[in-house]
Image (tube, rainbow, N blue to C red; front, side):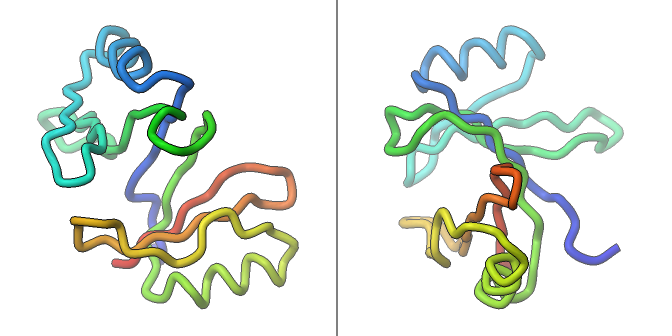
Length: 119
């Protein structure tokens, strides 16, 4: 299947509280030991079921939201196509500082937050 969902984000109003909530609720390990200080949530079980994601907060520079990320070969092309189909660009194609990751984000016509990650 092309362009699989490979990542999720749950961003609340307070990073520590949001990370503690989801860690306590689901038993997820959340690590911020990376150059961006981003809370990586490890949700896969021993059979590899599940996707990993990010848990953080609006105090890291954005508002509260939930998003899923699709892996694409050309984030700009998919962002342009999404906008042509009625989406609104939220984050332009951006290289994540300190990490070898390129992302973009848009809101679909209903306001759902969708991310694109180059893969």
